[in-house]
Figure 1 (cartoon, rainbow, N blue to C red):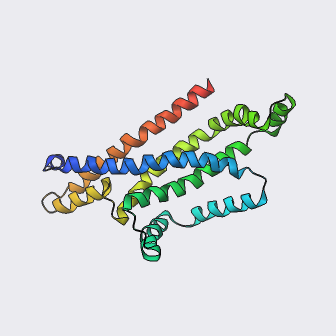
Figure 2 (figure 1 turned 90 degrees about the vertical axis):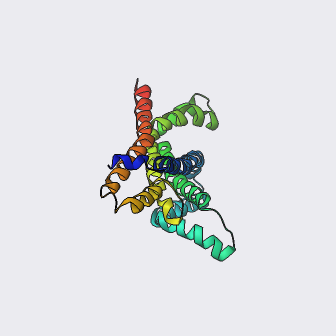
Figure 3 (figure 1 turned 180 degrees about the horizontal axis):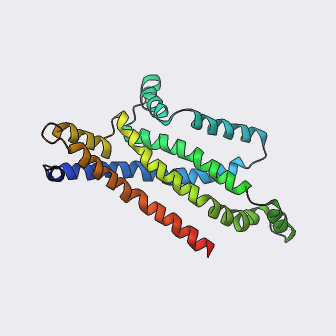
Length: 222
C-alpha cells in the first residue's frame, strides 16, 4: 500500500521534479563556490594586513550567522529595504555561493599554508619565479590535500539545500511533505515511504561524490 503511493497520480514525477530543483541549486552553488573559493583561498594567503582583515571578517561572518538567517535576510530583506525582488531559487543559489566560497576559501588557504616552506625556497633557488612556484609546486600539492575536505563540503552543500523549502522553493523535501500531508489519513505509512525515497534520492546524488573523492585519493597516492 505504501509503495503504491509513489505511483498514485503524478507523485513520483513531482518528487523527481523536486529533486531537479535541489540538484540545480546544489550544483550551481558548488561550481561557483569552488571557483570563487580557490581565488579567495589564494587571496587569504596574502601578507597584506588590510586584505587579511577583510577576509577574516568575511569568514567569521559566514561562520557566526546561521545559514537560515542569511536566507531570510536576503530573501525578505532585499525586498523590504531595497525593493529588489528575487525569486527564491536565485536567492538560495547566491546565499549558498556566499557561504560555500568562504568555507572553500578557508580550506584552500589551509592547504596552501600547510606546504613546507623549504619547498618554496628550493623552487626559488632553482630559478623558478613566484608564479611558476605557485603553478608547479603549490597548486598540485594543495589539490591533493584539499580534495577530501572539499568533497565533504560539497556533500554538505547538497544536503543543506533542503533549507530552500523554508523560503518557498518547491524542492524534493517540500514536495515530499505535500504528498505526505495529502495522503496521511488514507495511508499511515506515507511518511515512511516518502522520506525513504527522498533518502535514496539524496544518496544517489551524494554517493558518487564520495566515490570520486576516493578515486582521486587512490590515484594521487599511487
